[in-house]
Structures are given as C-alpha cells and as structure tokens.
Image (tube, rainbow over all chains, first blue to last red):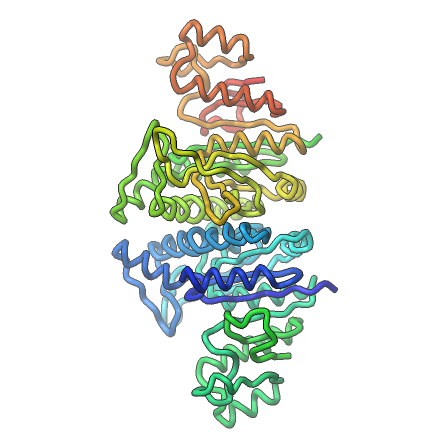
Length: 255
Length: 255
C-alpha cells in the first residue's frame, strides 16, 4: 500500500504571509502522496466585520447564518484555498482545491438544533474517496477547504480538524495514512509551561493514565480522542506537532 | 471520439436565483460529457462596492488591482463557483469547481501594460487538458471559474468567454466538442430589432459577407471571430444562443 500524508494546518498559519510561505515550502518538500487541509477563521471574521456582519462563536465554533455562510464560502473556498493552490503550483505541487461538494467527496447533515442553533454547520456523514484516491495516485495534491455539503444544494461549514480526520479515515482504504495535526505547540506536553517536554509517543492506555494524572487536560483531550478514533478507523499514525517542525522527526506520535 | 459540450453562461444568469435554477435544471438534463464556464462580474462589483472598492472598467474589461483580485477570487472561485457546484450535486451532476490554478489546467501571462494597465489580468498561454479529460471520461463535470494563474503563485482574472474558448480548443484533442455561448439574444440576428430573425447557420464566407453588409456589427464581430478561431483550432461546432433555450435545437450554429 502506498503511503499518504494528510496535514491539517490552522487558519493562523495560512493567513499570515510569512508563516504561509514557510509552511508551503516545507509542505512542497514532503515526499510522496499528500493532502493539505486548512482553516481560515480569522480571515472570515475580518471579512464579516468589513461587511458589518457580526461573528458569533459558541464553544469556539462559528454560528453560521446565511450571510456568514456566504462569507466563509468566499474566504475558505475562494481567497484562502485558491491562494494556497496557486502558490503550491508555483512550487511544482499539482494542487487541486476542493470543498466537500466538489466531486461529492464529503457529505454532511446540517447540525440539529439542540441548545444552540449553529446554522449552516455540517456533521460529516459520508466520504467518497475513490475519485480522490485516483487523483492522488496520479500525483495530484488535494487542498481541502473546511466546507462540506448536504447534497440538497447547500454548502455547510465544517471544522477543519474534522475534515482532516474524516478524509484520513476514508483514504485509509487506499493508502497507509499518516495524519498530522499542526497546532501552536510542539506536541503533547507533559509540562504545559515547557515546550521541550513533548511526549514523543503515546498509546491509548498511556493516554488514559495521563488524563487521570491531569498531565493531559482541556482542549488536548478531544484532540487526542479524535486521534485515537482515527487510528481505530484505520489511520496508521497521527502526529501532533507545530507547523514549523513539519518534515522533521518531531511532535507527539499516536499509534 | 466521445462528444463533449462546453457551455458558457454569463454572470447575470448565474447570479439571479430564478435564472440560475432554470439554467442548472436545463444543464443537468444535457446528455453526455459536459463542462460549465461561468462569469460573476455583477456579484464582484457588488461585493467590491460593499467593501468600498471602486470597480474600474476599460472597454468592458475589469481593471484588477490587488484588492480587486481578492474580490474576484472570493466571488468567482468561492461564492459563485461553489454555489453552482453544490446545486449541481443536488441534481446528481458530479461537479468539480476549478480555477486555472487547480490541476494547473490553464496558465496565463499577466497582460503587458500598453495604454491601459489592467492589473492582475491574464492572457491564456497554455492549457493542460489531460487530467481534465480523464476526469470528464470518469463522469466528472468541471465548472470553470474565470480565473487562471501564472505558475508564479498568482491568480489572474481572465474573461469567461476566453476560458470557454481555450478549454474547448484544448479538449478537442480528446473529444468532439460543441461550444455553446449563452448570451442575451436568441442567436445572431439578421435584424437586431427582431428576436425571431436568428441566422440558423453561418460559415466564414457568409460571416465576411454579412459584416460587409453591416448585418453583423459591433460586439457580435469579435464573438464570431472567436468562434471561427475555435472551429479552426479543432472545435466541431460553436452555437450562440440564449440560456433559456439550452437543450433546444435553436440559436446560431457556426461550423
């Protein structure tokens, strides 16, 4: 089975000129099959604000009404995605920018209203990876924007971590997948104050123990739970690292 | 050789809810391989205006400075393109939205400054149609936004008629191509005041004669010149018609 690296980078990295350049340089040098998944929340908030649209967040998730859906469609699928694609082409990476509607590759259901109405936000229900895998085998590098669709004509805003996880799981049918989450820390830290305290390897029993000991807490818990779920679903390994360390032997490896 | 229909529709049609629905319904019913090329100028002008950016046009062409390039990238590649893609998916058309940067399928040179500096506007220099043709053969329907790239990291604004013509020419290597330009009239008219005076068939010698007689004039002349150039370059036929007549045996046929 061929190898494939799926890399998720947050909005902050792709929205600033210097970090974007650095990221794309590093990404272009990664050998073999690869996929890039990006965010873009800061640019969406900035454009919304310029248009007099208020950004509402609940538990770190964007409430996406009709106006905001237009904004995120313009920013994620247009500005951020196509800028990355054009720059990767300049680095001889044959990039292809996609939302979940393109090639019908990722379908979702509009999130049901419980205590919060998130609006046009989608929970992934189906990934069609055959055409995607075929393109990857031909040397194409998909660049995935954080949008899915409901196959009823609506785009839906979907968290980029989720897109990366779901794409990685589905592509595990075709490839031996390494999923890399880039975030602001060098990895899972045993001491949150010390960037050099990266836990290099972690399995599920160690994870449970470290949560009990409160070494791993808060936002890192769902990140790791998602990582173990990806492993469970066939992803070979998940790496949590910092974007500027891409391509180095670094970060926390989850198997 | 398989047949392929390349259809270009202007911004006005895809930017209004009722005409867009009608267009996509008709488009979805066209049998066999197909490609849709769209504009989006009115939405770009509207967004620019909301953002306090002035739209400058010279001879009907948009002057595209850095700010305007961001606007057209958001509107053409994001809002308009992905809205069409999601709606086509709902009609069971396996659409894939593309700019020229995606799959490196259409490269252009930034237009040199002569009397006018058009800014980030591209003149097409190369079309890579192999991957596109392969996708079409697999049942994918490309939806082309009016943007190309220079392979140096820049997207460039490119006229949608030009995109349609260049894509049709390049795809003639792989398919027997019919290129359909939808515009506001039913076809080339022998009497501009009479919508029922459509000239059903025209070849190059008739065209020359009708220009001499001033039956064909103004904006229709470059449209037809481009059509004959497409025929010259291998396109089987070009049809000039009105969008609401798509799928009917109507309009002016150029062979």
